[in-house]
Length: 114
Image (tube, rainbow, N blue to C red):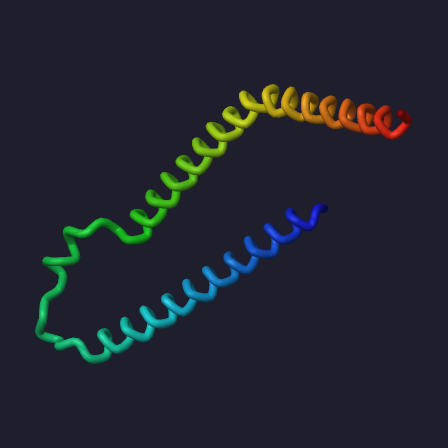
């Protein structure tokens, strides 16, 4: 594995760890807030009329993440196709650069012999 790949992996892992930590902190804060509201909310207030019109939060979350997964899969397929389309140009450029480097080495060797 190249040092660039290892560095990218390290950054990616650290970023994901940081995101997980902040997500857990958010969940902990919301749980604490919900506990305070549940313990301290007035018993004579009827919240059902407001909440009965809201979609189920678990279903909504599933729908959002299903869409996100589909979107990510679409982006992956697009960029894979894009890179595949460019690959021949990249390979031709690499060969041309290699040939130029080899020609430069030959020229340099010829110049030193003369």
